[in-house]
Image (cartoon, rainbow, N blue to C red; front, top):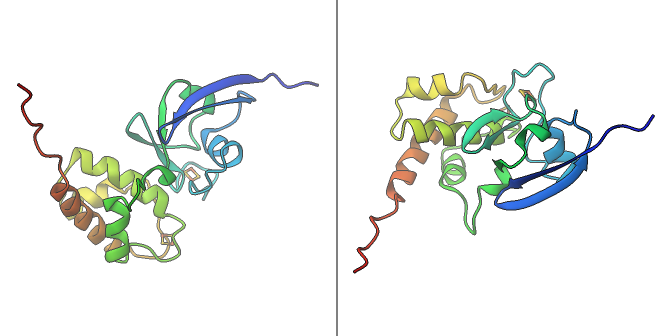
Length: 168
Ligand code: FES
Ligand code: FES
């Protein structure tokens, strides 16, 4: 029997992509299998690990919980989209503060942390731990992750864009 297919178009890491897919395809499989963006990991089949977290229109979302077709017209950012010529401050901070061991959880942790810092640009340790509630790390005990995110907050504050010069 022929499966029904649909054309889905969305922006991924700043580029418009279109694919003809079955409507049942989850966003995480769309990213990994159709676009070969394998930095987004699958760590469970119960929507619990958070390794698959990406940003959809700036919101951190577990990409195994949404269908690709639900993201029609939206803008998705994956871990591959963070680096823009040089490491993103979040990546830099994880490198400096040893925020990863095996690295399996890291893409999901970083995407979650980026949204967290938008809400809490200077987060306390408990705000970070609360924000990471939906993301499981089996290696680090979270200590170095918390330190990395606090360091990233500092780096990102330093990089705040300067007020635009007046045009006149
Ligand atoms: Fe575990 Fe999505 S793969 S929450
Ligand atoms: Fe291994 Fe987090 S670094 S699961």
